[in-house]
Amino acid sequence: MNVSRIHRLLRLVTMLQGGRTYTARELAMEMEVSRRTIFRDLNMLELAGIPYYHDPDSGGYKISQHFFLPPINFTLTEALAMLMLTGRLRGADRLPLFSQTARSAMKLESVLPPAIRQHIGSVLDRVSVSLGAMAGHKGLDETFDRLTSAIVGRRICRMVYLSFHERKQIATFIHPMRLVFLGRAWYLLAYSAIHRQVRTFKLARMRSLTVTDRTFTWPKDVDMGKHFANAWSMIPEGKSYDVHLRFAPKVAGNVAEVQWHSTQRVRWNDDGSMDYQARVNGLGELSWWVLGYGDQVEVLKPRQLRDRVAGVAAVVLNKYRGEGT
Image (cartoon, rainbow, N blue to C red):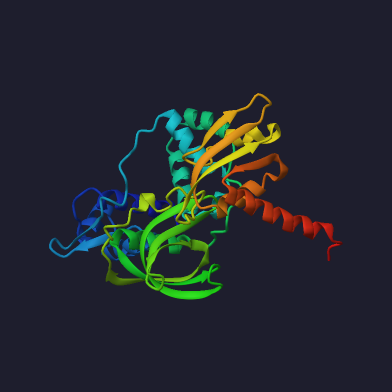
């Protein structure tokens, strides 16, 4: 593409988003080209994804004023924060919509004054942010887009899903309600027709998703903000327990630095150990977290959690006492 055409296309975009409509003849006269050339340029805009449209009343063309956002006045700190989270986020390429996020960062960086761009660049060269281990989300951009549209439009979807819990692939109609990122993966909260309740579905296990024209009504008795109740992570079991753990000095500091649960309380002991207390709905997820600390933690209460951890530890011990395979 030659420079003159690039310049003409930029002028064309500027005119069409100016708020008034232009006929092909008016555009041709303004650009000093033929109507045939104008139609070729309009076709180029369409291929580029710029949504111009024809107004049948005026017979002219224009671009939706909502396609290009107005300029935003970022402070230096705000620009730095945006570019840091988008441009230096390691592992984020596994997240849905990351490619669009990266492009927005490039646009932001390109309009910064040279001195500020150079300063931010020197800072970013010495900064990195890592999300750690995450589930794979490659190829989920389209699914993510469909779900966001379905949630806003309250559209019923047909989903084929690989259910680890049921150990088979299932097909069900769902009422999508909320997307949430938990721990390492994206999940959808939705009412499932075959389960007759609100369930949590992992996006990476969706084998197909079709948005229908049918709509649903938001149930009055479902509060998405309270769906996870006081679960340790994302699976409430219907019964809450007062949990009391004691961590050895070697790991106590690392545990205390993290907000693991919204109800947690910590208390330091004279010997450097730390008592951890919380009220948790369900023990399944919590038990695996406790086991991850091995001999550096002891369950003081409840008895059910103590017995569960002891049972798993006994199985592990028996497994490693043998000669192995």
